[in-house]
Length: 106
Image (cartoon, rainbow, N blue to C red; front, side, top):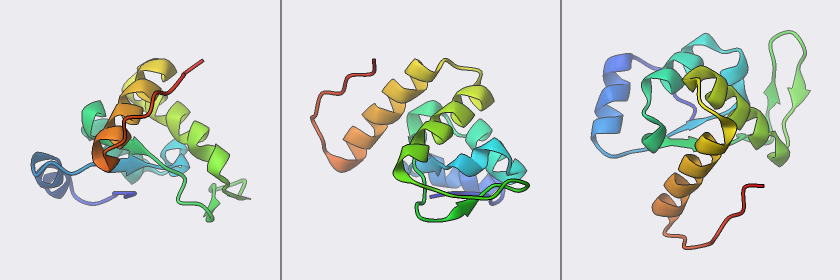
């Protein structure tokens, strides 16, 4: 889930095989951005934590479609293209939930 704790704890979580999720707060929340930066893409999931209010200066109520904001934030933090992030985080979710669904990215 939306991790903002110590880097040493994050490393232990990742090394234990768990996933960390990125929310739209990765657009502005520095501790969350750090956790996303330190988490390998192969251990990241995208989420919205909906319904919740996000934003520091311009608050808004989240919706499921805000997963795109999570995607864009992760891509920017990781300096990766959105398609790569979408494909890998989809594979991660499929592995976590045991899904075999085919997903189209375009």
